[in-house]
Image (cartoon, rainbow, N blue to C red):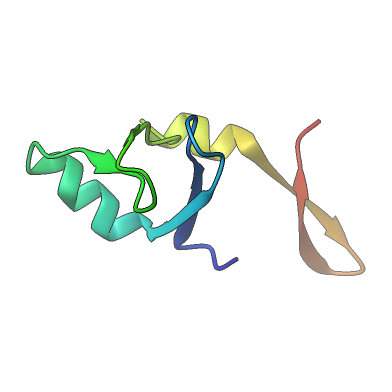
Length: 72
């Protein structure tokens, strides 16, 4: 998964919907909402602010390069 994509799991049908962060944020800014493309259930955007996004990942230096790690 690329850094500019986000995966959202539908609470109803449990299928995954992928989208580009830039397009999703534009849609939300316009006052619209996100729906599952399989069953049309309203989806919740997982990153409401940048702090939540930054807390999800952490970075560590290994052998002179930065490695992305998931927080536990």
